[in-house]
Image (cartoon, rainbow, N blue to C red; front, side, top):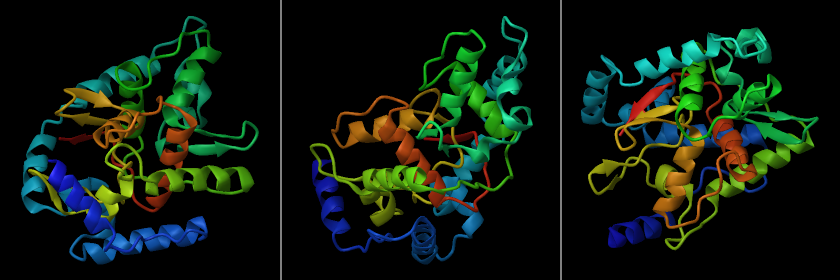
Length: 277
């Protein structure tokens, strides 16, 4: 394993990064998306929402069989039940979101100019609870993942449309971008080493998925977890894999990272929740 990771790191030096240090978000996005379209010419743009299943026929066949009876269906139903159940004050989650919370998942995360920070969907869910006199939920899995799974399900088919406008939003975007390409941990690797430079290559028996469309299918049911998990649960797991100390869920670091990476997938359709290994 160690030798393989070292070889991956070495290979990354030979592959050009798809982003420029001082480029605008729009030019970043075009370069990022263009990089993957060139790297995987047999994959249609809209199919990148399916991760590794968009580039490997054998994996796709297995995934399509699982999707006939998706393991996240129960969570969607549970999430809908919680979403529609009134709080003690008589209000529901619908009172906190535009369009009553239906079909709005593709608008998150967004940068709140008044607060000066990125707001993710699970942060908005917990803030809705607090606003209505309820205790917040844990951010990585469980009830909050089920509620966000229902909200994602109602958004299927809509295009991701994240805005980066204003100095604050630009700064958050740049922080997320820097995080994605920065080396960390004992293995001295970045997110991009695996999912940009080495996307499509194997690490042991697994194929590294392309970064384009990575967040369109969250929350995800992972076989490894035996349940649903949020985006920040996955970020934390990736940090641990390179032997770096993970940040807390909904930390500024992870919120900005989510903001950057979701923006890179603008134009792709939302297809969450999803199932992955």
